[in-house]
Image (cartoon, rainbow, N blue to C red; front, side):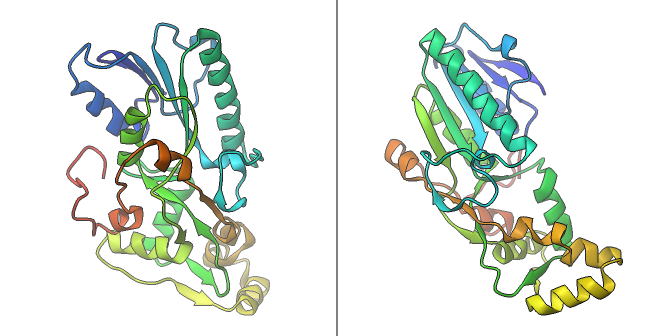
Length: 269
């Protein structure tokens, strides 16, 4: 994780997906034009290294602090049930940075971001992207699970706009998507839009029972493959909308490369 001083601010996680947008945006501002802000694009590695000489803090947290299957329109007041190591790391970081900001008497905006998409995508979403473009995604009929999403470009812009604010805000493009919609957009990204194969649940169970030893079945129809895309977590963004007037790009249209207003030629795509 790279920490970088940009103009009058500090960016922790400058090498992250969101940092790739945030750093050039901050660099284009003249020195002294903005307050000195500590931006955290990733959880800090060490509490002892938290900056002191700043005017405000902004932390890009994650939807994962709520758990992986918390339902629809989850609000910021919902209890935190982080179910994986990543979610627990973000939850711990929220507390550490909040305690630090409180001691200094400085404002802190915590932005709990939805699934992020942009150049440098990694982890489960990169795996899903690779499966989608290879035609290795199978949807189980009756699975109506949904997710929220936001582009890294918009996340970086909102981080800047919320600098100096105090509070916790969910961050997404304000839309809800089904997993088949996401997979279809991923296939459109490479110019070969195709809806995923949909099978009845009894067929999936039968194929798993008989042919579960085959790699293609394990990748597409095993419990490990199906569980993440059978969970619903969408974010309520009412609090952010009340605090900020910002026009988000529709994330799936960006992924499908159909958003005429999105700067595809910028640092992240």
